[in-house]
Image 1 (cartoon, rainbow, N blue to C red):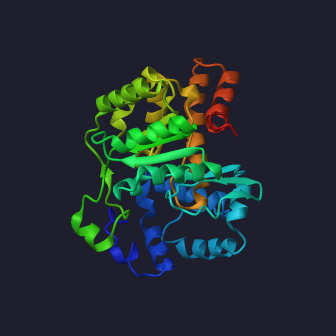
Image 2: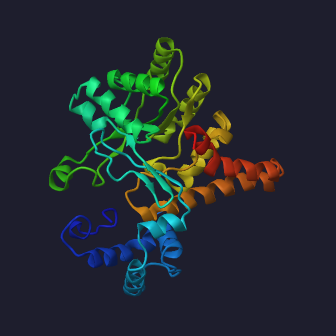
Image 3: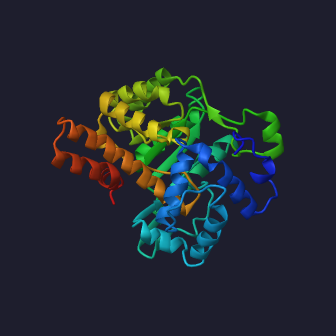
Amino acid sequence: MRLCGVDEAYITGDKSFKEKFLKYAEIMPKLIGNPLYYWTHMELNEIFGIRKSLNSDTAEEIWESANKVLKTVGVQALLAKFKVEYIATTDDPFSTLENHGDINGVKVRPTFRPDACFAKKVSKKALEERLDYFISRGCKIADHGFDDFENTENLEWLIEKCYEKGILLQLHFGTFRNVNTRAFERIGRDAGFDVFRDTISTDKFAELLDKMLKKLGGLPHIVVYPLNDAYLRPLATISGAFKNVLVGAAWWFNDTVCGIKRQLETVSEYAVLGTNLGMLTDSRSFSSYVRFDFYRRILASFIAEKVDKGEYDEKNALALAKDIAYGNIKEMLGL
């Protein structure tokens, strides 16, 4: 909306939800190719049964129709619709985890995310106690986001603990936060002013893995998500040099048609596509399960093209797609 010149009042300001929606609808025809265009129409179709294109002419009608459906669709209905079996939330180490457990057949489990605690210099002893508590509540994943592989003291500790306790570790890196100081001061963090870094030291990452392998005798399962996907190729080759390291799904700015294709192409050429763990989303919306469908359609098209060209057997293609979309992550987490 900012890119289209929409006033901030309709984005983070005090305009009503309806006013913001109508303004969003106005710019929708400009967004072809942008993932928001696809996600928006997939949500309207799959959740609300609305197959019309969103624009200024249809906005009022779609607003009314969607809000009628919202009165009958809650979180549990969405989880059932998308056949969700397992949810891994992202949680501060000192979260009480009171909302986790088995809920209507869905396993809701915490993910240990210590970034903020590292910044506050919380003691490692306290963090390990909290990690043990998370594990007692079914935690199988830790998640850590950072800029680059400069000061790795905290990361080394996290790798060691994940290895000791059998936890999968997701690493998101290459972010350049709050680049627009004026906007950050006026609007705050996580409001659209983060970008990806120009350089990431993949050499230092390889050196870190080597150091930890020597120290521990092994590594936990580590899944890497570079924000700058120019580093997919070196990271894919690093994954071949260290057992248990994988390249994750196209993340954040790369969660696009072309970004997902680039990720699939790079992993298949420089690593192994068949061991890929498929899609994840860091969206805060339960309606965003359509983004798994978005990913899987692109994955299916990528594999099907190989079959159509006679490069790949159809039976193998079906098995590969199922493993990537569903089976691999279940096996890795022991579900």
